[in-house]
Length: 290
Image (cartoon, rainbow, N blue to C red):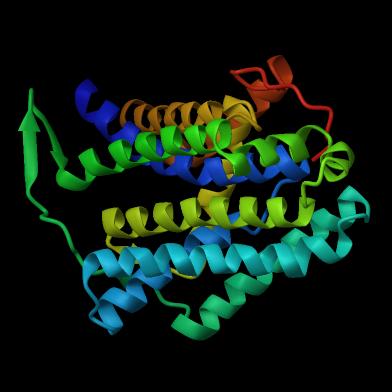
């Protein structure tokens, strides 16, 4: 029973961590929470559905188009909701992001309908049995994929020319501009990269639960945001750790207390973190407001 809950928690927590990577990446540069990120995750899932179930495209091609769709959405979110009001107040940008979130959700409802849709099964549904715990191939793939992407993102930010530019803009945008770094190009790239990660998460979750809906990004977006804060927003490793902790906590709460408390637990953890360690577990302090 314990091992089963750990497996379930790691699976769900990995998806939270993947979405949280997008939150923390964008926050690291702009000092703002992209509240449309949950909807970008949803767009990734629907792109996968469209290419697999409606267009009958090969699985790997479908994944590529899902990531491309989410990344393109992130690009336009930055250009429409953020860039024109870059110098406006934080509250104005926050409202703009919330508005974009509502627009994307409603566009998805118009395009794919308001009903929950079945997602095609593309991997074997066979369950493996280890020490009494059962898990599917996807439950092994999702955590491995999430951790691999986290290390890839960390390497990209830490060791590439664009990564250096991202860190420079994050630390001091004006100084970075004086050094010849185009802030708009860097911020646009960050939105594209973070959105691509959200698209991958959307595709994995759709495959895992075998269903999608136009509002699937709301709860996952909120929980992933909480995961990012829990781990220390602005920290790549912290986002993944926060996601895993939240996933495990939900799994144990559902098994040993009641499934009814599962969703409320995320907000309890958020409250505890804000009360006792506002900078999160990895303690990335920031002077930027969000």
